[in-house]
Amino acid sequence: MRAPATVLTRILGSAAGRQLHARARGNDPRPVTRTALVRSTSTSHTFARDELDAGEHRRALLGLAYELGLRLRTKGEVCRSLTLTIRYADGSTTTRSRALPEAGHHSPVLAAAARDLYANLGLQRARVTQIAIRAEQLAAADSAHHQLQLGDTDDKAHRLEVVTDAARSRFGTHVIKPAALAEHHQETGHGSLPGSLSARGWVS
Image (tube, rainbow, N blue to C red; front, top):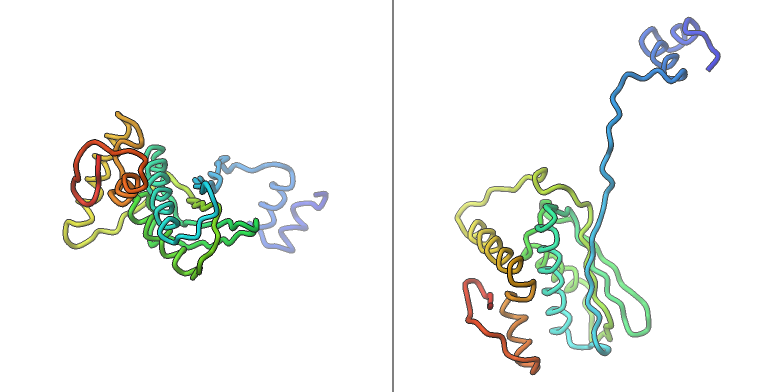
């Protein structure tokens, strides 16, 4: 900028004129700060064949939500919104998103949001080939606030999640899972799972 500072201060005022004159010449005393990019992470399930059974769709959603929650907790991250994408046999897709009540990585919360997104689609005998969910607007877990709840139900659920995460970390991600997934695993003849039913519908 070739305009002298006196001209700029006369037009913009003393402070604004001097600041513009300095910025135009590359003089900026402000520290450089990095703004974290808004990131996302996703997981998907592809059916072995075109799947019409809504129960199978919901079971896939449950598994994906728990996988996504574990991934976020392992990385120390939370998400602020969730996106569901359904791919059909004809190659078309439907995508829906929703903001979570608060940023989090609690698997039951992610599963509930995914179920609601799916239910709101109102699918009737849809031939689904793939289901994917994506956690969006990720942030560090220690930067998120958690709304305090009356009663200890929420706290128990989080403590249980810590225990199951530790078991998966030591013995593998499939060593413990929601009972709904394990029971279906047995019913479809994919082998029995050792262990017994534990608290709040989990098996190991």
